[in-house]
Image (cartoon, rainbow, N blue to C red):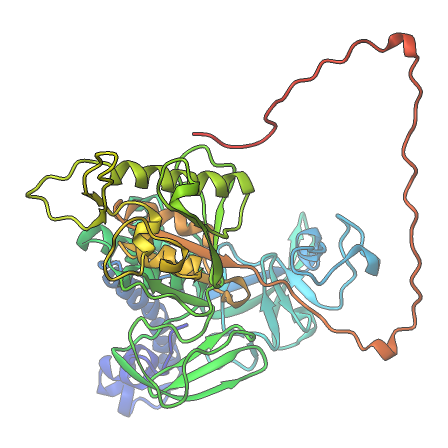
Length: 539
């Protein structure tokens, strides 16, 4: 919501407008009140022309395109017959405030104490409602005297009962059939879908008009024009989640507090509002920079340095990261697990085989380490070009059997984990670490090349969040050689109960007994058995 300053221009200064007509009307004419009132009304009409012109100018750039059309004055005509009709008085079940247990009936208008009328088409918000636009004697405020919702505009008091509201009787064939009241909406916002019709249509991006919609559109446009960078990813997900990031190049944290509904982080330049139960990741006195996150609801980690986020508990790697013919995901946990070692003499390949604990379907885990070992053995047995500089392991020969000494490539996972300074022969369990962190191993050896993680905690989503399903628009701009991993952490709502105040008793509910039937032995034939896969994925 933009700040409005009155008077905004000479159109709000009747004396100045009167002076334009000449000094006679401004200084000499004794009955200047009437022409002054006339030019004041005319000035309000021209105010709208000025607003329209400024919207056209702002529409010339996608960063400043107006989110809503502004009507300086809008005549709201209310009919007495449309008060609390089915459209405005039907119960809504998507806001959690109405349930069938409270006596509400589906598709039946409620008996309410408020006074609701259908809102004007495309009206989104209006801060003030007045009884006239020159010298109003009645001013109603949004959120106090009325509210605007998806169904209409709801007044705390019936405008027809207020003598300050202009009213007239509507006649048909000389018979009074209805009554009309006239109110004026001051600087109302109307959704003309400016963002979509001016720029969003190019990307086939049509979302509900909002600042976050414009931010997402600009992030995608910037990536298309100049190439995807970390900055575009940051601002795109700030729009998708409704979690603000630092705006200015440099800011200093001055206070961290709460109000009734928000967590507040206050810097020397801005006040940032977040969901109530998010946790700050900054402290008072910290210096932050543009694009930095302030709370744990949205965090972006790049793995190019092998950094393992301490509060990242695990990563599930599935389709897109694994080879084909896996039934499910493999889970790499951020904890130390024992390294399982099969000595070279005990493995059919003659190479030391290692594995460690992973989450997932057991056959998938077994297949994963089998493939790693097979590929490592195949690479180790490739011939070595004398001119090629590759790390090797020295394998002593056997003179009795005529086997010469040789060098083989470091190829198996056991070779990579070998801690010996001089690598001679296959490593044993003593030469290998006793434990390994699966997530650290994954990040430091695989994901550190052009992979990054975006973690979103759903409990911290802002009210103006576009929704994570709109991340599909980023498919157009994420480079094909990079991997963007999205991690959504679901946080269910919790509640506590004082045990000493529980008076109810608990009983068990016995389930129904299973159906039983008898089969004539003469109908039983020789059984035939078969094995079939009933689930799985193989591509």
